[in-house]
Image (tube, rainbow, N blue to C red; front, side, top):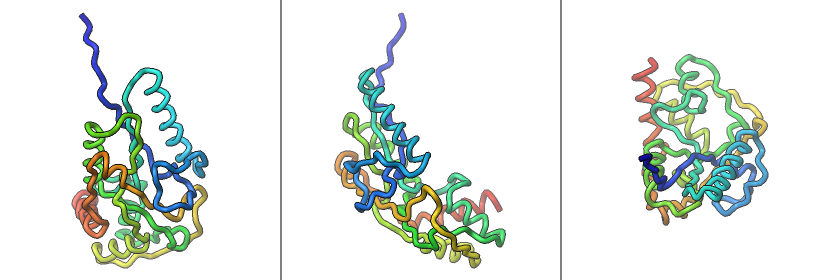
Length: 204
């Protein structure tokens, strides 16, 4: 006899990009996300809508997680931290968009993993949550930290804002704190050195 598996909760990844140029900071899950400014953001909004529709049609519990600038060991090579580290070590200029006037809510991978695990068992049906560190950091601060950890000065190539990019991301994580008992504990001052140590050990 064929067994039926009951899906307790379907957890999927979304992104802070869905907030686009929303001027109300920090970004809250209650804000309108109907105006994406990049194709990537549009795909993430579509992802959320498909999950919501599928959940309604087939009674599958689902939880969406909007990640904010995730970094750490085993990070993606196309992300700024990985790319900047690589270029600084090679003596190549790093592109600093919006002339360095960028702030991000950098979230260490361990905090993201803890948030995902909590969402599997504690999330309320059909909800979406911001997963972030909950604090803004200037992009130039990240570069300063890299220079100190690598012992090399970066060649900063200041450039205008890229099309589809946003100058600021900042997350309201109170909903995740309340429902998921989410407690991010790694600042970029603590997490960035761990990324660099991993990079030097695996890419030197």
